[in-house]
Length: 170
Image (cartoon, rainbow, N blue to C red; front, side, top):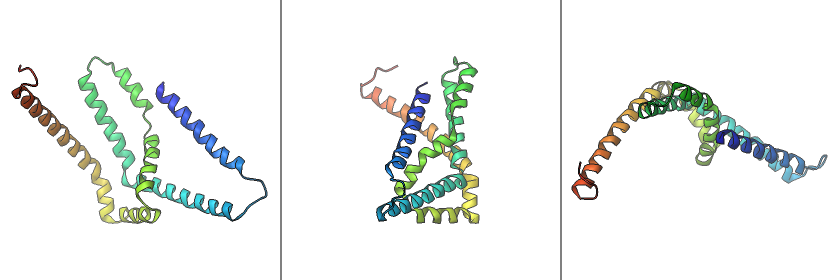
């Protein structure tokens, strides 16, 4: 429910912003500033489209879906009392395209359009294609290692806290 309310608010905000800019223009009147803004908008749209292309060719969407599936699998193990219908409903609400759209400002913040175009060109090379092909497996195995290491570190921390007298010994 909260997600739907938040999405509705975002859509209304975006619609208002777009229409506000459109209504602010005077019909039949252009000046240098308007042309400059139009050029900026075209460049911004090109950059956004290039970011979307980069996200697409790097397999970020697929990796996002994989990470969600792994998270759900872990939560199912921790919460065995939760019925499958809940998880099915939860997964149905996940939209990887929404997640990808949320990445766009991050890429835009740190990379110029020229850099994004260079990354797109790289990912079109044999090495770039290999990276995108094997990255999901690399990420999956890395996450599993990270989870195991995290558990080991948490156990070590608990033992040290018990030894130091900060936690009761079992």
